[in-house]
Length: 145
Length: 143
Image 1 (cartoon, rainbow over the protein chains, first blue to last red):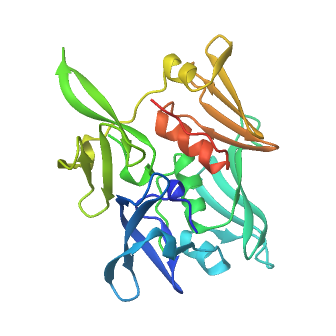
Image 2 (cartoon, rainbow over the protein chains, first blue to last red):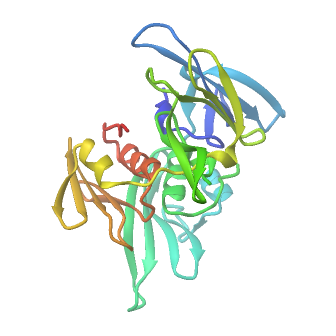
């Protein structure tokens, strides 16, 4: 199950087998002191539907090579293990050792000595984690699949 | 103005309630979490609006453009378990993590877990919360 605190509007999640985009997050009702039902409204890009589901029915959308490419990453070697996206001339995000279910993101900045320095890094397991990291790096880029 | 796509449940945002000498006065609201007097209960991309529930079941729908980020202050850091390690440099130890906030210009939020670091230059409360969560640290900022 996804942690509601990690989700934002526009994030991609998995409903059944389909990738869906979150249109809204609703706190529906408190069942008890410990349990609150969160409802999210999803848009299915494949069929153009909008529908509401409980948060508990959603899973994180895993990263894979196709989704990395859709986001705008370009692979830097033939094995598809390493990916890079240029933000501008002096900022980029890189991954190293990509596998189908896990990667480490490196946000790098060009220094005065013209060397790339890591300013932030994070372990990432899903598309919505990647979106959070991109936003935290002040990169105004919305992931589109 | 704040980008609605940066926000999650439990984040704190400011909503303008008045102006004083051309300054906008904001009231702080938490997004749908726990029992508080004021909550933002719904975030929607559809037209970029938020639904604000002030008391009981009374709801107000307002445009996203009314939301403002809440600046990080010394008082806020102190009340959330941070201490001033050196001038304008505040730190907090959370389980398996180290969180540092530099209040001087050009500094920012630094969240470290092991060898992993996350930085944010914007000294606003919801960015601090997002950095803490992204690093998998269980710590909720309260105002």
